[in-house]
Length: 490
Ligand code: ASP
Ligand code: MG
Image (cartoon, rainbow, N blue to C red; front, side, top):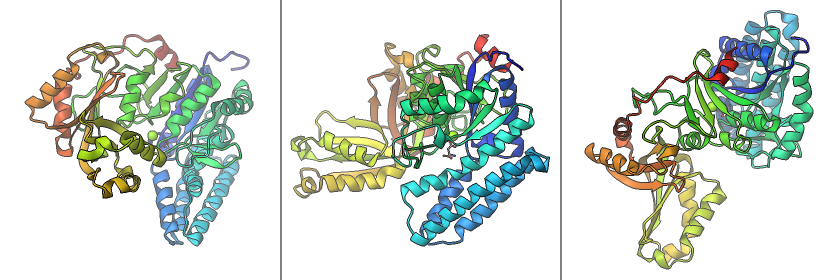
């Protein structure tokens, strides 16, 4: 394609299952190569599925003094990645450079595991570097798979592209610096018809220390790069057909939502619908760049388009989601009305821990504040609150700080619920009919969701009842002819 002006700039992210083995990588590379004949394309890749978990696991073992865990994993990763590379790039001389790069990354990994086992200490910074290995192994393989298809792919470490603050394990991008880096590094490659293949999940501080954006953060990497480059669209290629009205394992007649707004998708992500990392849409919001969720295993399917407007469907309610791995923390007692700044102190405590608070509810008598955090954050949150309120507990003005892990949150999401009266009423009537007991309720002032807390065991029933009540299975499932979609697949 000499000299032809590329019609648009696409950032395409492939998740762990989409690069899970050689044939998945081949399929994903084909999607990239095909798009790159028409458009300027930046690919962003996750680690091969399961690799990050295994790295974190081995790091934990090493920190406990297990000197072998690292070596065992490194050997397995060598096999897995060199095999995938050999399958994708049959000519040995073509793959030597990538094979060497894999070895260099593995050697670094080995040193990190050895150091961890020796020190019996795993700092957040070391954990970030260990966790990054999966993406850094995968990107060069993916790039060479793209090159095999006649489009030049070049792996780029996102430490060169995404500049972040220094919060290891959940860093935030510094967009100005990131933009400069992307212009300097990616733009010239795109001009030469190269497909940069960036590692998802990772970035670096201004000083060059490697950081990660948080587990599942490759989605966020894609929108950060999309925003930095002013892309026309970001496509998250995954292993499901798009955003669904509910989890199909729980609600069998759940269906794909063709279009959804940023806010709705963000609410769904926030409440645990697994398709998107919760921070993903933040990056594209200011510029209004559309984000697609599409199935890399069925690229002929349309997927879900997430945009500023979305598209409304009847009734205002668009989707349901539920999260199970959460705990309800409640803090209260008859005297807490008199305790200075209970709310402020409670949430400065959670903020300090960076515990993710998913729902807050306070009774008007003010003798109980309850909120929900991820189960993983529950214990340390309660401990920190007990320290913060130690004096008040000893004077019995605060009489309890308790945690209940056997609960789930169900959220009813839809932007057009705003100004649609009766959604809350219908929800609670439907639940009442089914005998589902509601423990707490919250509605955000955005009115894009109503969420309620139920016992874990009642979650499925709550979902089925509300899905039926709002006729979510019956809403139109076919997308109107969509010009942008046609373009994507040309
Ligand atoms: N590989 C990373 C993880 O498993 C990032 C990602 O897949 O998005 O968390
Ligand atoms: Mg993911």
